[in-house]
Length: 127
Image (cartoon, rainbow, N blue to C red; front, side, top):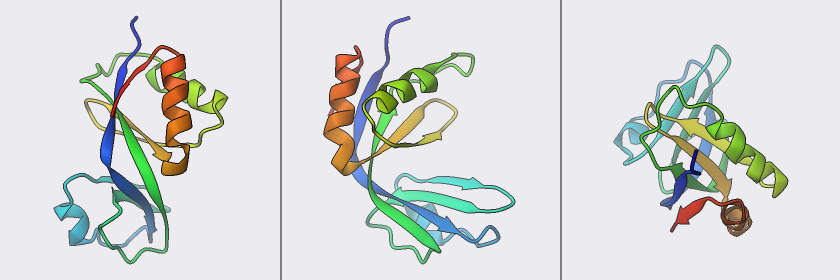
């Protein structure tokens, strides 16, 4: 199977942790791109850095590499293969997925190292 192409998203992102029963702020729903994850214990929101949220904790300055899709839900090993490349390069990741694709969030200061590692391993990265 040929290796995927990843596209660097232009925005910088912030990962927020909110109380598990918090209401999703309207600013999140108005954002051009956002990701929400909720469990019994937490509510996590990823939004562009310029969206101000009152959260319990946050971590900003992440960049998103989108695995260009759509990817079939039956595909096996995409995240594992990419995660292995990042692990070998000592790059931390935060992954979010949609029905069609996956997004690997990388800290901005690790981005060059991450992109270089992907290209060395045969992936195409568009910026």
